[in-house]
Length: 107
Image (cartoon, rainbow, N blue to C red; front, side):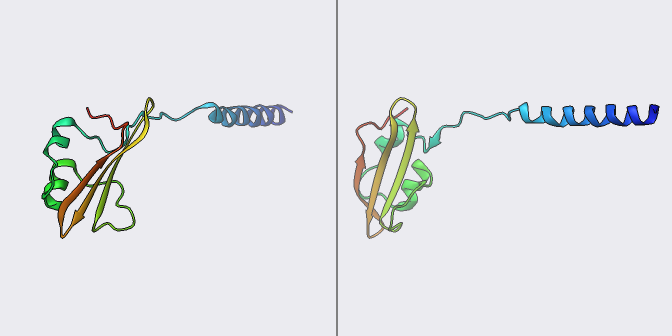
């Protein structure tokens, strides 16, 4: 009788302990999404730079569009402004055009 009772107590304890695992939530770090573009970096980007120079200044882009040889897209996200982008276009391996969205926030 004692064995049967301790078996049920053990089973109930195990079930209760296992169900408590569902109440725990993992830590989620607040991560900035996209590339971080600083104002001094943006000022350095100019027509005629090579891809290597752009990558050195801004880092590699998160997106490259349909044609990675001719367009690099640096995307940022903030809770206040949503998504913003910096688009750098290349012709013959050199920067030919620079476009920024209106809501691009530079740090």
